[in-house]
Image (cartoon, rainbow, N blue to C red; front, side, top):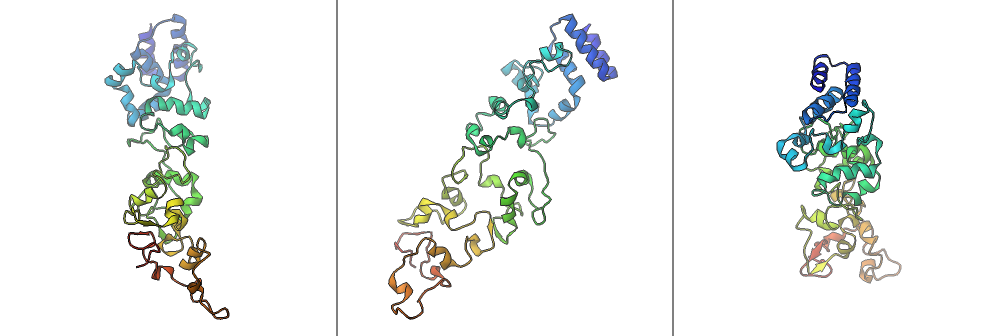
Length: 311
């Protein structure tokens, strides 16, 4: 009887017929084979099956994965046992329907397979903010890329060149993304790097939200500034590069946080040797906020020769 029902569904595809077929299967109290279950699932969820075969989750339908988990059809890997769902004539039953589950439950279900690649996700900033894997990834997308990211093109003026995974980041981090409109910026719009070049969206939350330890993430590209040095700039040791630089973009040269170099230096070095101010109590100071401190303190990121970073 089950085979005839499945054949009728395939030939006619009527929603009413599908519901009736499910009830008949339930009343027959039959043990469905994986092929029969697949046919019944496809009858109602054909759009999900058609997209899944073109994205990375198609792996779940492979013989290798089936032998590994014992789950067939592939939907059982994520949605659990569907027998009660079918037996209830399409009612939810004990199916794990992601939209009805808490964020933590959804993420835990994804991590049953992805914990090896993202072991710290539950402690990440995204997870702690209540986001789910589906906030960024589509389980049923037809996207063939490994990440199966949602696609949200950037509409903001001046930022339309941001594509790929970074375009998805802009959805939530629009204020940060606006910094890339400055002339002095990291070249995100040009596609030279992505947000994920510096940030790991799945990593444990940290003070700087960088993939490495403070400035070490910056030094992976700017290795001439990372040292090690005999004489290190204290700001680099304590706060990292962001003590002086706006990492996303700035109206100031070298993406500095201040327009004038001396003004930036004086934010930390309020006390300077007397000769910087001059020796006359009534005369003009020798150096002021328009002074270019790096004319003398040239090796400002660190030095192997001089503790004051002189040339």
